Length: 190
Image (cartoon, rainbow, N blue to C red; front, side, top):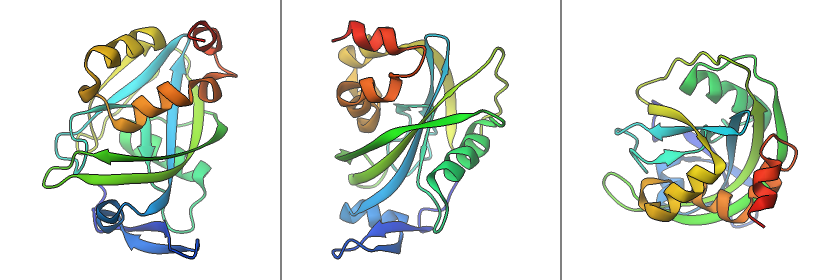
C-alpha cells in the first residue's frame, strides 16, 4: 500500500504545483492531479472493491483503477504503473479520453476527508482472458459488470460506491465511453 504521507503534486493558491503529503492534501481538500482508468471487455467494466485497510473509502467499489501521479510522472505513465501495481495488468493499450474535475467528501477510517481532483481519464479495451494479480493492500475484489447493471446497483445502494465513480457515471459517462464498446449504452441513457 502506498504510504499516506507520500508527497503528491497539489496546486497551491497561486495555481503552482507543489509536493504535499497525500493525507494533508485530503484533509485540506487541496486541488490535485489524479488518474482514473476504466478497463472494458465488450460491454462490461472491470470495477474494483478498495481494500479494507485503505485510509479513505475502504471497502467501496470504484472504477478499475484510480490514483495520484508521483511528482514528475505523466498521467499516462501513472495509469500504466498503477494498473500493474494494483491489478497485475500489463501491456494494455490505454486511450486518454479527457479530463474531469470534481470535489467530494469521502469517508475515511479516522476522519472524513475531501477529494478535489483534476482527473485524467483513460480507457483500455481488454481481451479474453485478462489475467489479474490483485495487490491485497489495495484491492480486495474485482468484478465485471455492465454499465446498466452498475447504474442500477448505484441507484439502490449508492453508499457502496466511491463518490468519484458515482460522479463519473452521472456527469461524464458520455465522454468516458464515447469511443468504446459502451457508447451505445451511454446513448440509451440519454
